[in-house]
Length: 353
Image 1 (tube, helix red, strand yellow):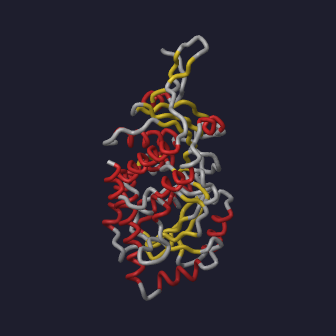
Image 2: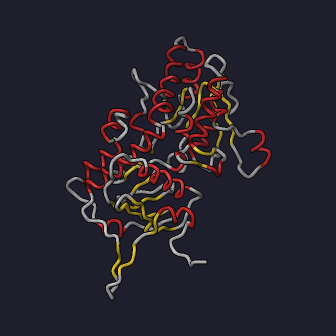
Image 3: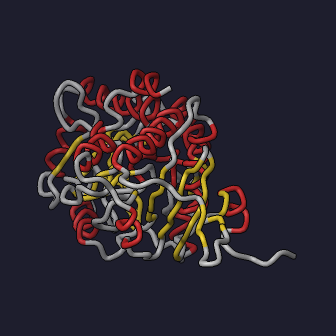
């Protein structure tokens, strides 16, 4: 029940409550969905009588769309209460702006963007990270073998720079530093993959984990939150649905923030490694795992968020869902394909064999 979700996960639903408040007096009309550009990664869907239907798609980005639909469908199937009929659009690309659609991340200026959990909460097979549950199990096992006292006193980062300025600056600043274990990856180079790649659970062997944004947000953050380690991140320009729960200072601090140019990174790392308040630093790591791995980044929290997103969207919908398209001759045709069939065929039209 929604009340149980509210009690279990206070503060989780800010990224639903914000756009609901914004659109309360300016309802989302069907024309907005009609006018939403069908760019690569686009999906248009509806929920009708507790069933998810796929109306339209354009392009694809690896397995992202399939993973996201699986996660949404799971939230629907396990809902203890009926969910309302809605029609919506989403896009599974990294960087999309504007329009009232569901996306993985947004910048502060994009107030009409609704945030949904991203694909990795189901699975990210292309990178061999696997399902989210699999990754969590491996992280917890590693943590059992690597207590804080055994973890390496270094800042770990692995990734491709992708010619992104923020990542290039980070790599340059950390080059040759004793406190850093930073290497760039070439996904198409066998030597790089063999010698430099670190699995996500191997990240848990380090006390300090660096987070850098990618093309927009970076999918790594939720994985890093599964380690009992201190996350060190630059000032973030992109936010995901759980970002309101990130605390950079105060009694509930659960990560360290440095400037986007990394000018203060070395000073901060020396302070973290050699400073007197080592117990306080360990508590930041403990808080990160407790808040995210054990509570807010769990399947239970994710399904609660999906359901709140569905209900929030319904609150601001200014039109009713139409299940049929009616031809000029009066023939009624289903507007969408049931998600169960779409997930198997991965297309909207096909000939019977």
